[in-house]
Image (cartoon, rainbow, N blue to C red; front, side):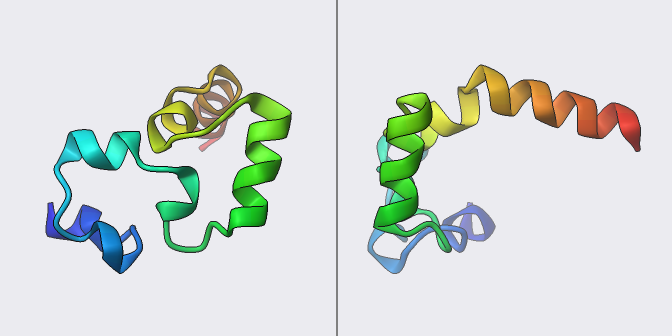
Length: 68
């Protein structure tokens, strides 16, 4: 879990996996508030869970894996 927590802002270091899933997208290291707003506007992505379960991102990930 510590490796996973390192992917999030320090404010989320002690959060449970459920709390990380419910965290806003900009809680991820490297994702700004402006980036989060764009994801919300384009795909209605508000949380880390939304990002991880978005059908377009899942499709793209599947294609990328198959192309390896």
